[in-house]
Image (tube, rainbow, N blue to C red):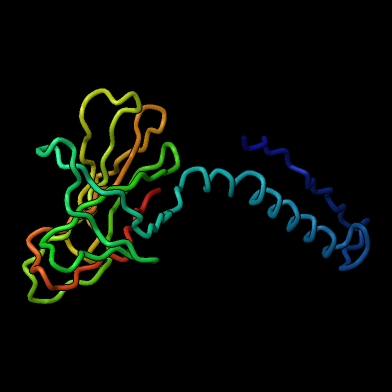
Length: 198
């Protein structure tokens, strides 16, 4: 809470033909101007700046190296879909596969608004592959289905959001990362997924 402002500097009037105005001393110009400086500094530090900080929300980034669990295939009794190959700092589509799928849980601060989703990676220029990252949510008690909140479908290009609000008391959040329609021997990789929020 911002403390109430109470002025600390009080000007004592000089009296004509009685007071001698001087630069130094307890009642000199230098002393009075330094006390005014202290007053303005305290006002900025204790009252004005806390209010400004409270009105503006800093832009933050959560950058994640994908560490993916295999996605289950709902049409095959929960058997996993073709999975990504996990490397130390990225995931790659396995050679001999035309697709790869995976998911990971994420945690964002409660009450923030997600403003964009970005993924970076590598894909050949002439590739027919389609890579996508999706931010999804589901109620914490598992009722209802999952809801897609934001999807990025181009590497290196942030997908903007209308401002998805994170409500950790009611929702849990996860990312799906998929590649489809790739040639079997081409190299497709995702280096990171980045969420911007305020």
